[in-house]
Length: 306
Image (cartoon, rainbow, N blue to C red):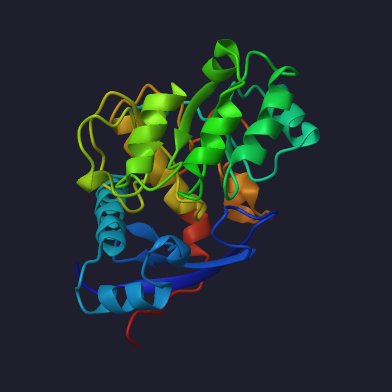
C-alpha cells in the first residue's frame, strides 16, 4: 500500500472504562497513505499487542489482526475519497445502546431522557453485587433493556446465587450477559443452562461454536460475521475508528441495537464534537470516505519509519 504517515493521539476517559484497567489516558495513532485513513487503537489489557508493536508490524508489512483491520479501513476509506463520495451514501447506521462506564441514577436518567432504550454497563469482578444494583434500578425504568459486560471476570456461583431470587420479568429485562466467564470453560455451559439468560461473546469468536446466541463484533479487530444476532460495537477508540465500526454495521445491514456511540466517554476534542451529542442515532461525519476531511488534513503527520 505504499508509504504510511502517522498522527498520534490521546483520548482522556471521563471514567474507568472496564474492569481490566483503571487508566484514564488512552494512546493511539491515526494512519494514512496517499488517499485513505484508518485508526490504530489497542487494548493490551485485553490481550492486544501494544501500539508500538503494531506500528512496527505496519512498518514491516507484518499484519496482526489489528493492523490488518486498519489496512482494510484505509483501503475502503481511500477508494471513497478518490471517488469524492461518503462511504455512508445509501446506508442506514443502526441505533445504539448507551455505554455507561458508571452506574448511578443520574447517569441512567440522562441516558433514558436522551432516548436510549438499551444500556450497556460493566459488571465487576464476581458480578453478584452489580446484578443487585441493576435489579434495584430496573423498577425505576421498567422498559429499559440491559446488556452487562463482565470481561470474563464473573463468578458463575455468585451470579447464579443472585439470579436465583429474580423474577422472570426481571430476567427478561437483561438482553444478554457479555463475556460473563471465559467461553472455553465448564462455567460458561453451566451459566447458560442454569441462568435462563442469553449470553454474548466478544473475544475468541473465531474459535467459538455456532451455538453462540449473540456475537459482539468489533470491526477494529474482527471481520464481520453472520449469525443469529450480531451486535457491532466500537473499540472505544478514536472517532475515525468509531466511524469505521458504524460503516461496517451499516453495510452489513445489522438490525440489532449496536454500540456505536462511545465518543462521549472521553473528554471533548474537535473529532468528538463532529460526532454530535450523546444519542441513540449515529451522526455521520461530514466529508468523503469516513468523513472528517478538514480535521484530518489539519493534523500533523509523520512518515512511518522516518
